[in-house]
Image (tube, rainbow, N blue to C red; front, side, top):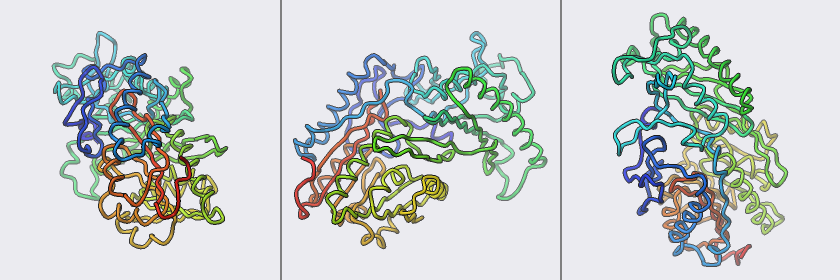
Length: 454
């Protein structure tokens, strides 16, 4: 968890926030930007539309050789809210507070260029959702005692003791996850030197008592954060999870419940577990689901008796699966992560969906047995794009829905999928003020006829 907070790109952008130079596909998780904060690129909200147009032009140039000009010119561009769009934050590194400002702790990201911690103030980084921004601001001024070893000099913040010391002891990072429905989940990452040499299934002396003490302190903190969210009108529920090496303590719930309302009339419920993937830009994710549903309808309307079958690789918690299920006769969804697969099962049940068969396996293993189970395949690969085996598998489908977090990798894959042509293309600005762009295309195999939507 801490490593994630400290990892950034090997090729940072300039501090003025301009688009970074792009070349070959980045490794997974890297977008070519320094972290936001006191040392990172400035966020100019008033320039959002201009930056978006620059990003659209940059992506268009990257895809020019891979997409027909008619499809490029008809591209659908979905903007993000300029502020308050990010529903995930962190892991943010815990740093000492500033007594002159009355803060007991600050939240930061490591800037590898400055080789220092870049403090994240929500006033300067207005991308976080209202529940997350409220919680981050509240945490700064609560009586939480962090370890003396985190201080860069002699401790300057008076010790408070009590529940604040229990929460702060060993605290190293905080991760926040919110929903459009106003729920908030905080994950606290801890360091305890005593656990370093502890063998699996061994317990520390007094571990159960310490766990109960932490739960009591977390309950106190939860109440204070809930009160802050209610007073600000930014949230409805708070849950907290603590993580240590081989230890995890849950203060009631370890997930949030998201609610999406789509243009086709669907009202969808999603369980999103702590520490697992979900799209951080929830408003833009709704745009993506709407686009997928419209493209799925076009595919099904062209299919025999409108009875197409869908195969989704790397389905995660069922975000796309749930939205698309109504458009297909049958859906096979593949996911290897146990926690996400269990969340997907819960989401299928919560949304009363019975037409989906969930296969818990690696996609590379599952594809050998699933080729004849569908007419349409949905892929959402990592930034490196499709691997050779998956690309060869995808070629066998008449229809392909491809979501990409790296236009450069997408362009390379499209050139190799020469049996298919691109019918439609959309860009989703999931990460405003960065070089990152999420794009999606619908493909159809040439021998099966002309494109459905010119």
